[in-house]
Length: 354
Image (cartoon, rainbow, N blue to C red; front, side, top):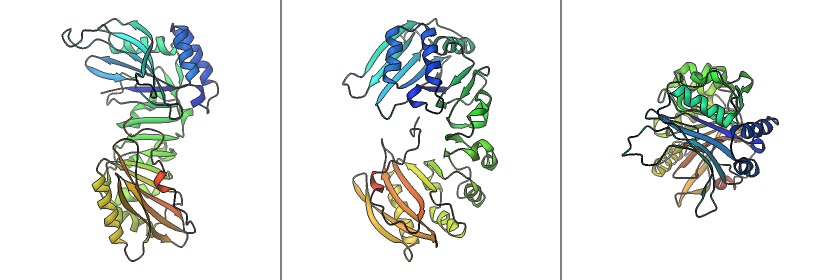
């Protein structure tokens, strides 16, 4: 299991102008070399930390600045393997990676780390070394991968704009988040039952990624319909959802214009099959559009009228990596130009497998 925190420098953290200055001060007080500090601040990219403890991976891992294509890592490795499995000494490293280079990784700073440290000591050392021992940390995106939140630094408060709890339940990590962070711009989480839909943090998020709790459940369809959030991404749920029934529900209970549901799938055949199923289901009322290219093939796209003021755009596109996106989007009835949908990037602010 992993714990992950990503720290963004000033140019990526426009909501809090002082974050860059505080990050610079923390770096200066950390003992990093001047070259390492300037490397971080000059390329203005993403910092992240990782370490291993007691056979469990607890990491503050990678993210990519989509503009510059630079990556910056702060990594701490704690010895957990036998000498046979681990020949190299444990080290704490600061690295950066320019994807445009043939040999991308460059180590800027490296120090040895004592072995056999307990979780609390590891957390304290990371906080002191990389964050100057601060109790308030400005972070654009906080990502946590661990079912047990007991080892998290409860004495620290993270001021964030995005939370990625992955398949864990976000409420477990609220104790380490400053309430000033809400509402979030993005939330990725597991669900803990239908009551998740009533939680104010969940309901107030600008964008959501989560998996459905009950397959093809009418009760969950109603909960989903009542969410204020208009941008939702579902991972690998397409085969469990009756999209045709969802569309019919939207015909009876109109969704707001701009509502967009994206279903991310590995299986391009499943995406194509779902498109063809919906095309047949609404054959009498659909309006065909020029298809899109998915996995090198032409996939159908079409419009389905919902009510006098809106219609549903149904299509699929490729995304970065081995994924395919099945998308349904509510658009104005008057909209006629859909020539740009093939080039659209359907990813949200977090990468699918972050």
